Length: 340
Image 1: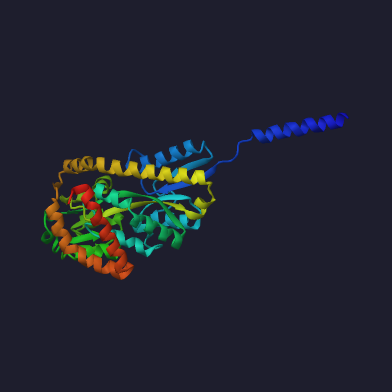
Image 2 (image 1 turned 180 degrees about the vertical axis):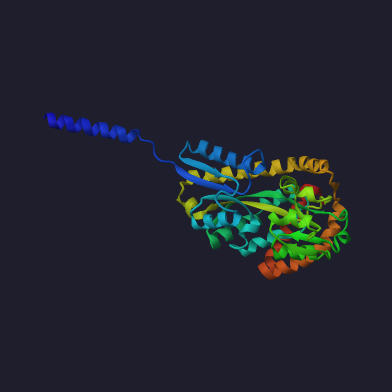
């Protein structure tokens, strides 16, 4: 009798201990290139983390890995595809090796403004592109964000017209699209990693380069450049990507939370990027750089020269139908923003 009582008490105490032990949380490792600090990318990731952990009551824990701790963008995306990393924030340029059609987003002067880009991000075209990439690669895009408009800088002369680029030695990313784009102006395209820009400019290997204003300032590129033009030729697009195999294991409720958090993060990044544009231009001017604020008419002149050579290449790579669908989508979004 006593042994039965002791057994029942022991069993009850064991059940209490087991019940008291916390259920281990699902973990999302979230990687990005940008550093920790008060910048749009880090603020976006913190918002994602806080929203997911709050809405799931801690059932999902989000661990943030800035400064390429999980590898540079291509390596991070590769790990998302393999399922060893759950989430990454990457520029779409890093995805071209996994999904060729993503190159279509590199059309020069496609977007007239940030607001125009945001509207197109929310279009059926981007939803279809994301779904095709998920089905093809196992990488799901949860949201699209702005990674900054790219601008020309150089040491020779102000760039106000397409002719001003003729003969300049311009560093570009190691991308066929960017090589064709710069060469369309008669400039000499010099592909090289971003880490080599400063030394190449000091040694006269290049006259100039092209990057978003934030990158130009934060990475000290303006210490070796005299002129900058805000021509905004190509918009860098960020993709908030998640391993589809991980995503499909989540409950429907938690899937909704994660997608909502990604959308929240992208909105924060977008608005902070746009709001910070003037700050970076002012900081660049303080370095003694002459900044030309490119007009809409001037952008149209640049587009007239450079778009077709790039479009010809993209049609060969991704198909004329996909290119035309993107151009039509961008054109159809203009009236709502700028009128007929």
